[in-house]
Length: 148
Image (cartoon, rainbow, N blue to C red; front, side, top):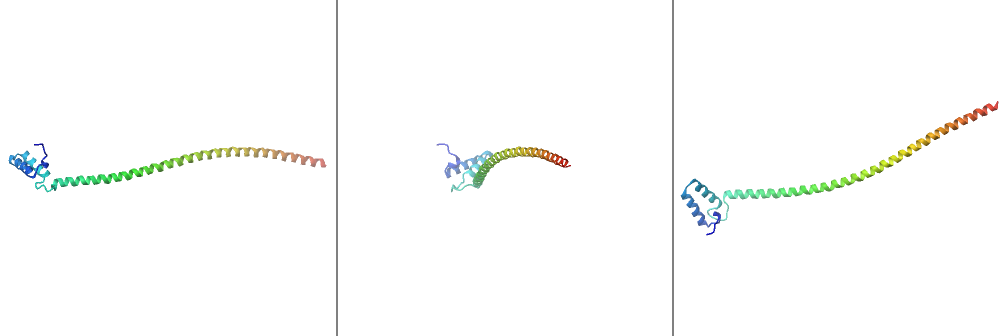
């Protein structure tokens, strides 16, 4: 006879095994009999024993919880991918801004250089105007003195 687990034995076989273990009446035999009775319901109606039902319920609950957690994890992963895409866009925009700021800085330096050139030219004009004023005063003074 091939080896079979107690749950695979026929109704008569599991009762005989349980009965034999009860007759032996050792503490270990009594424990084993109880375990067999719990695992293999005596009436074999296809229903689970209360212990197996609790274990089955726990497994189902954990399975449902695992499915819920997988779903939540999937949503978190989707959100993280969206965030990564948006961060990439922000980085691109910041690089564009940096390029434009560099261009603005170059333009401001050019403007500063041209303003310095304008200031220098205005100072030169001021010096020449002072020279013209002095010359005009000299001419005026010379003209007045020649009138006498």
